[in-house]
Amino acid sequence: MTLSDWANIGQVVAALAVVASLLFVALQVRQNTKSNQATALQLNADYWLNYITTIADPNFSKVYAMGASGRGKLDQQQFVQFFMLCRATFMGCENQHHQYRAGFLDREAYAGYETTIKEQIAAFPGIRAMWQLVRHSYSKDFVAFMDEKISALPAHESQSAFEKWQALVENQSRKMERAE
Image (cartoon, rainbow, N blue to C red; front, side):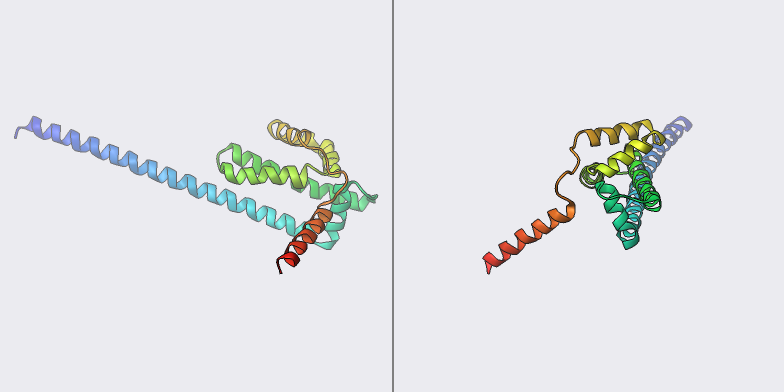
């Protein structure tokens, strides 16, 4: 074999090494992307768990229920509590919205989030009013998103989630009694 043949073999080996390296890098990038997505999803879950735990506290749940429904008068201290709870809600929603847009949350996880926005956040008149009060402090993209969700859905007017739940429990109880 001539020196030229060895040089050609060396070039082929080098080209194969480059291709193998690129495949390895692509695999690492893919794995890193999945890891980042899992971390983002976990951080969102942790955020919402802490938030929901806070709202479940009796000191806040009454204020949140009164403020969200728009029923009852909030005093100044209760208004501040409701204001801060809504700000935390909107900040969490904006964060999740931006993570989805950046590709850190998949479509399925985001679909559940959109349902939560529609049914548990944007559907309440007091939260809608608070959104109007603070919407100027969020990104244009998120404001457009929230405005769309709010305009696409009428506010809860007659039946609270508690009343809906009671009706569903009664319905399930009747079904169980008939099955026996």
